Image 1: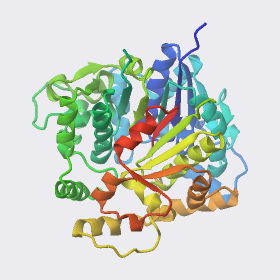
Image 2: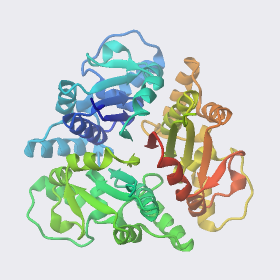
Image 3: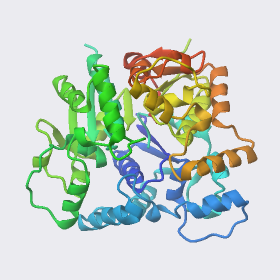
Image 4: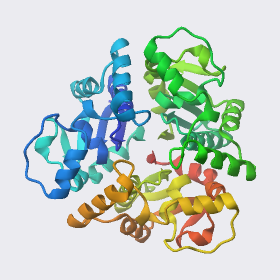
Length: 159
Length: 159
Length: 159
């Protein structure tokens, strides 16, 4: 039996377009039978947020971060030419026009293809994000688990 | 016969300085006899644009993206301290002063060293970029081709 | 004797949060007995700057870059929600609250764990940074040395 190839992506960025790139590569790699992990840290955690307001107890700083950061993949802005959300609308329009997948659908497809979605517990702590605020069926881990995946990886990316 | 080492870079960014870093690493790796591929996706495609206006038929959104995005490597801005193009001018000035290579020259050298320059067809579609608008002697491919290169790669980077 | 695993990080970014991510991964990898190198290039060099003003002879452009760029890790801004330094203060506050390490401490820990910190001499030249302005006990090298480390690496990241 040959071992599966491995793709491990750190998604640090909270930009819509960068998260799209991460999930397109992840879905492609899963289709080619790689074992794929996306490790969401810092602003990349926003891609995993539920879009409703989940009432959880938080300190003042954590509440502020919670309010300032986008709730979920659909609300993330572009890394370039965002123009207060206008660029993101343009991208979504062309995605629809070309029958391509929007970010929330790319994430759904990743889950269907058993891409392992991991939330970095250390940065969740820092930004005050609680498990109840994040999507279901994801894993929680730290940098040690990331390294265990990455050190035998074929494709390692930081996005 | 030993196999060649492989360096595969995803150039996602449309920033002058990040593209410089990508091409400096690519040229270095080619000099050390690596097989090198730069896969240009999203804003990274702008590095491959011709600097003149090529008349092609486009929808409204695609025309807007076409107008808003820089035409070619020489017109890209900095990721930091761009100050409406002033930072880019500063960088170009110090590059000249130190007899270093500007981005268009780095791209030319990469082509002379047989670095494979690939344009991502899926994001070309999204942003409405046509083959006629991009440089000659480049390849066109999708995420599957990228993964085929990357999965046996020694150095894989996302820039 | 088995060879040590290798983690090699290019730190291009001058953002506080991205540098934190780089140093957290580097410290983690060092704790798992990897041979770890962080290659600081472009704005990532700022993480290595001393925080005082070191009087060195420079041209006009180099002086301007020197003044515009942050002096040392503690003064770097966030990649997102920086709000003229306010976001960075928020991050530092939550770091303290959670007894986590601030960036200067992460760098200190990396040095204690023998993470090899390298300053890219080519971009030092471009930005006009002199050895006297950077921290002690670091190495100076170019893209060739980076590639020599990276090509046998297990985890290669561009941050």
